[in-house]
Image 1 (tube, rainbow, N blue to C red):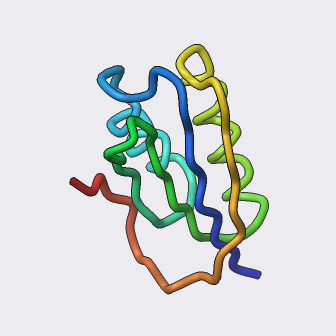
Image 2 (image 1 turned 120 degrees about the horizontal axis):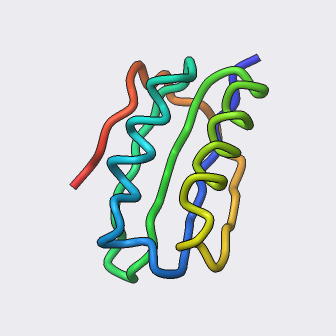
Length: 89
């Protein structure tokens, strides 16, 4: 069953390659979505796919970028049928 998670990361998450790293990691999982910087200094990541794959992808992001993340907020949302993972500006 497809799920969609919107995750907001705060901390020193901009200017450290967060978006490029997330996009690279997404290539290893069957997930779609996007990652973007927010004006608040946070990073927003949206991931859609099978529940286990989305969780595995988010876990990989947390492991790789954990040194920069101070707080993570996860929201469950309705999948919209995204077909690839992109960096949004």
